[in-house]
Image (cartoon, rainbow, N blue to C red; front, side):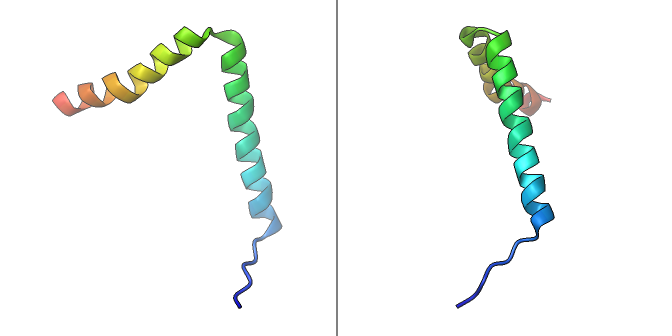
Length: 55
């Protein structure tokens, strides 16, 4: 049996990262409407890669 040990500082960094992401998402969801967020995600995931591929 192999024990997987994790340093406590790594756990703190992971919790900090998750907290930053969730607070940013919460702020954006409170500031912008759902349609604005969806249109931004569509631009980010669909329009941007196609524009980069054309260059």
